Each structure stands twice: as structure tokens, then as C-alpha cells.
Length: 444
Image 1 (cartoon, rainbow, N blue to C red):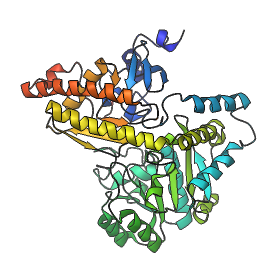
Image 2: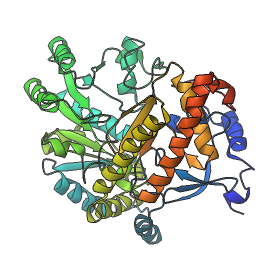
Image 3: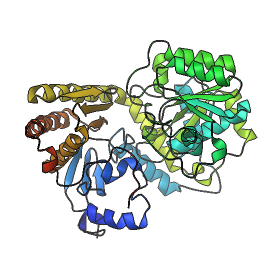
Image 4: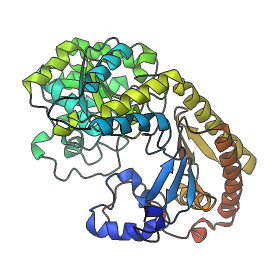
């Protein structure tokens, strides 16, 4: 019996109620919590997925016009070319006492794609890879403090920012997130600044010039860098002897084949790649200059499952298809159509929204005081129409013009319903469950 035939229960919500009792927090990833999208109604679990289609445990099919596996499946779910390569690797043996040759092949490919990089280390997730990069930077400089902007994972080095002030990570991660379990001794070692605010970074440098091991930033996320921002970060890092680390976990592979920083011709000392590089199979890479990366040998950075074969194999197949099919161009075109479509649909329906984000990673926000209630109702109505949808869209190679057209037609119809509900003050009355969470909550 398969999952969609009832192995796990009649509905995803039924299984999720069970999960909350035995899995603290309900899920392994905060972004996949049903409470973040549509409490009590979100399908929660899938039985199978292909292309842009996902089937719930009850066999109902949904078109995913939301996060595409939180940005991991850049080619679409279960891409046949990547899966074929992985299946072949499994048949040959995914693990051995010896090392897999694919890790050397992948290292050469990543260095060819990023000519400034000379060395490569691996992990299997973006957050742990960022932690490895910070460890290497500290080993290289023999300093402790990190200046950073943006979101970089759940590890101690990052959450230590909230040991200094409860709101330090507001605007970077989630408002009010408590750093429970993070050693108090790390207080003052992670110092945040805001993206495109080079003046904030310069103030940090002035106060901590001889203590900064690294400057950490995404090269871009919701918008492109201001003129000179990345260049000045590079200059500052060089001037003070700090390691410049670009977090490319989300941005890479969206606008080109490789790291997004290549578009700006600014070379970091290290860059971290993950998520989309292997189309849903766990894989991450830390690439960097040899004189920095060799500091890894002065520290203990090692893990058994960083040596398995599936991750590198999936990455090689994903990158090959990405280059051959010019996937980035497709992602930009589809994402641009969605962003333009959101705006036009809103104008025709008479609803106020703000569209943001680079085309492959687009977002919109309702410009009302009860925006979260409206967003929850939007997700509810779209789910009833057979779409996994929220106020974000991550494009994949499997998204077609047909998917875009059909989705935008339903978006406009849904916007019209929302306008009526807003005008009548009936948004909350139309909700069939609680309002979606906006941040981290401890689940009862």
C-alpha cells in the first residue's frame, strides 16, 4: 500500500496532529510548518511529487506555485535526468570504506565555474556549510567575531547575535527569537548590520577592527546590491585582514550557472553553495581561496555522511542540465511573468499589494493593517482551487507558461474575493482556521 492509499492516515492534518506529539515543533524545518501557511488546513505531507505537481496523502493533486521545496528543486520535483544519475549511483553503491570519485569531479567543476576559487569542502546542508565556513575563517584569522547581514541558518555562531540584544536578529531571521541553548560565552561574537548599509559595517569595523574574523553576507536576496556595496565590503575585508564569506545558499543558480556574485565581479574569500545545486538531494559546498581554505586542516571538520555518493552525483547532474538547458534564463522569465502578473491582477481587482524580490524568488505583500489575515485567506482560497500558494513564488525549470497563465487567472479571481471581504470587514469570518503564524512560536 502506498502513502496516498492511506498508509499514514486519511489526511495530512491527521498525521500532523500525531507528529506534534512526538516531534518537537512538528516538523524539521520551520518554513514547512502548516501553521506558517494555513493552520489546520494545509495538506502538510506529500505522497509523491513530480514536476510542479504534488499529491497529498489523500491522493489529491496540487500545483505548487509557492516555494518549490523551499527553493531546493530548481529543475522541478523528481527531475528525470538527476534521478537517473542518482539511481545509477545507488546501484553502484552510495557508500563505501573508500571515497567516491564524484567529489573530485564536482570540486573541479565548481572551481571552473568560479575561477577565483581553488579549494572545495563539502557538507550536506546550507546551515552546516555556513558553520564550516565560519569555523575556517576563525581558524585562518585566529579571531572570534563575525560581522554579518541577512539569514544564515540555525547554528550557534549566528544565533549568538541575540545574546547581546533580544531584537538583534529582527529583520535578519525572525523577530524575538530566543537564543535558548546557545552558550552565553558567545555573547558579542556575532554583530549584525543591514544589507546595503555599508555605514553600519564601517561602524562595526571601527569598534572591532582587530577582532573580526569574517564579514558574512548574501550577495543578493530580495533586491540587487546598491552600487559599491559589495565592492566596499571586499575592500574592508582586505584592509582589516578578515575573511569575506558570501552565503549563496539561496541566491546561487537562480540568475546564472554558479554563484550570483559572479554577476557583480566581486570575489569573496569563501562562498557557500547548497539548496538548488542538487535539486532536492542533500548537498552543500564551501569553495574558497587556497590560503584561506587550507586553514580547515588546522581545525577538526569531518563527517561520515559528507563522503556519501548521492549528493555529489546529484549536483553534477543538476549543474550539467542547468548549463545545457540555460535554466537560469527560464527561471528569470517565468519569475518575471509571475511578478508582473501579480501586479496586473491586483490593479484589475482593485487590491493593494507590494511586489518585491528578484524574479526567480518573488514575493508580494498585502498593504493593509490586517495583511496576515488576508494572506491566510488567499492561501485558503487558492488551496481550494488546487494550488499550493502563498505570497511567494520560487520558479523552477518545470514551471511552464501554461502553469503561469492558469495560476494568474485564479489569482485575479481570488483577489476579487479578497477585495469584497476587505470592504465588508469579513476577512476573518471567512477563514476556516486560525491566522497563519508570522514567526517562531513554541507549539503546545
